[in-house]
Image (cartoon, rainbow, N blue to C red; front, top):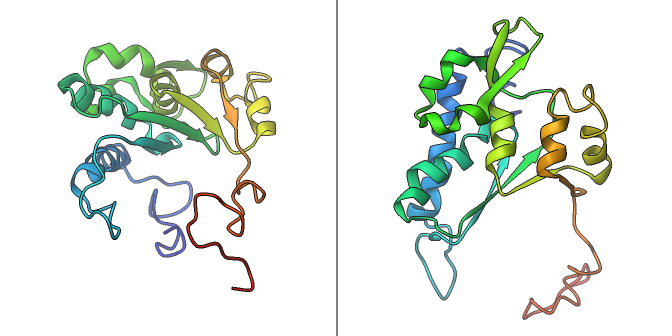
Length: 203
C-alpha cells in the first residue's frame, strides 16, 4: 500500500499529516472490528461465510490503537465478541498518535477511557502540555503487547528515552518480542503434521 500511494497514507507529503487522520484511523478500527462478522474470510471447501466472533485482532501501532477500546464498548458490552482478544504490536514507538486532549471527544468513547489516553509531555506539538496518546491507550486496553524482536522489547523498557515516555507503562503491562518470520523446523511443510499433503522445494 505504501508504494502504491506514493507514500501518502498519512499525509500529502512526509512529515505533514492529514488533518482528519484521527477520523480515518477511527474508521479503520471500526471496519476491522466489523470485517470478521460480515466478510467472507473463511471460504474453503467445507464452509463459506463470515469468519465469526472467535478471533484475535492484531492491532499495529497507534493507527489501530482504538480497536481494543471499540471492541469493549461497541461489542463486548453487548455480548458480542465475548472471547475475542487483541494483541497490540509496536513497530516504531516514536510514532504514538499524540493529539490535543480536547480531541478525546471526537473518538466516540465513554469517559471511562480518558485515563488510558491521558498523557503529559514536554513537547509543544501538537499542543503543549496535556494530550491524548493513542498508543498509550492501545497498550493499556489490549490483552497482549508485542513488538518486532526480543531486543526491541528490552530496549523499549530500558529507559525513558528508548521507550519515548511509555517505558513505565510497557514495563507494567509487559511486552513480548517476536522476530519476524517463522520457525522453519516447526512449520516445515515437508514434515508439518497439520498439512494433509506434504511438499518441499522440489514438489
